[in-house]
Length: 406
Ligand code: ADP
Ligand code: ASP
Ligand code: MG
Image 1: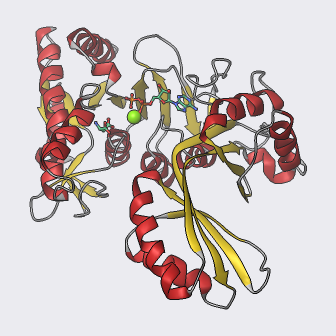
Image 2: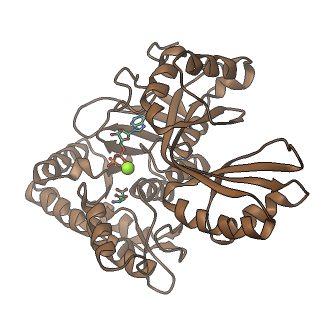
């Protein structure tokens, strides 16, 4: 029998009617003769509420207790969905992450799945039940509850699809597929019928929150057919798959952006070997991830060293840099929290020159000042002031003619 893993995100289970709507969809799939494992998120806004409750008590709560708290959101939805299915006469059973034994490492609030027990799920499916699993959570070998990072229910779904060898993993959400860019920023964005794992991974890494990065990594690694589609409307959504030989690839498949960036500069650093490691060493030791890095050409034997970090870690990074600055005899540390990163992504870029200059040209014509640039084989990213985000995205969408299918 065909087996599908369905995942429904927060908005799709946001109230009782929507939970009933999910139950109806799942029931229909059962009536078509499909086996279904459903992964659900917490009801929309719930996880944020739990985070706020914790922070109302402690500025830096213990990550272990944070996970005990955050995992409760999903426990509510699995029970409600199982009830809604039973109410329709569709046998169902719900499980938390630890009941399934979604075994993870112990890095609380961003744990990685290591193994999943399938015996129980298989048994329930064989008995004709729908299995409803809480997304976003796991358990360590020692029995501590973990969570998988924001958006982690996507990864629960893909991981389950991989171990159960499901025919497809269907990610139901509040948009009807993956678009050329976030339709909330560019209403003219176009839905893509297909996108490659490689491009989707790049889009997710560069800020497109439609799928958690790890879920795409996982799907690529275990070759899980993955589809993003609407929980409200019918449609075939977007299939994420490997590149097919012979299919002509669009130059640019999409535009991603990340609002969570901040920039730091150490000015007037004496220009000698070892500077980069002296500046970035303490940052890495504090577990702060660095994204783009630029070191200017030296003038008067001193240079400026600039890099970007996640906005949530800006203050911590700034404090560390001020100490380093003193040790190195640099002039001063400057920071900017109001920057964003905008990127164009496409595997077709590999074989084409001139994409970068087209991008810079388009932004220049609109008066968007580029503060930093970084490139790879299949993407070009620029850092711009936050106020230019929408303008930059729309300008590039237009310049590369993404509204039209190519
Ligand atoms: P869920 O709660 O179902 O997990 P998310 O909010 O995590 O939903 O993801 C869906 C949202 O992702 C959409 O509402 C959309 O605003 C946003 N998004 C960002 N980039 C894209 C894109 N390229 N295509 C589609 N949606 C995108
Ligand atoms: N509820 C979690 C979050 O809001 C996980 C998820 O929705 O995927 O991040
Ligand atoms: Mg999500």
